[in-house]
Length: 106
Image (cartoon, rainbow, N blue to C red; front, side):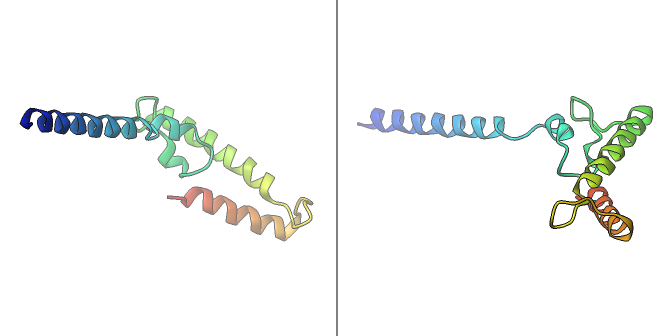
């Protein structure tokens, strides 16, 4: 009877370890986060495929590209409630707010 109980505990332990491994595998990698166009500022997403922070020319290039994408996405979002593109002060205000949110989203 003691052997059966011991075997059950080993089975439960193995199952628990398997669940933890699967949960860890489901977590997003830093490289996946770098490819995401939403969440996080450009500075936070400036990582290489191994998850290390970019530096030097690679970082500068990434930040320039990211800022351009942010501006384009903000222009796409600058519409009124009827779907028309904003113009003038309304567009300027919307762009300023959107770019600030994109740069400061942490």
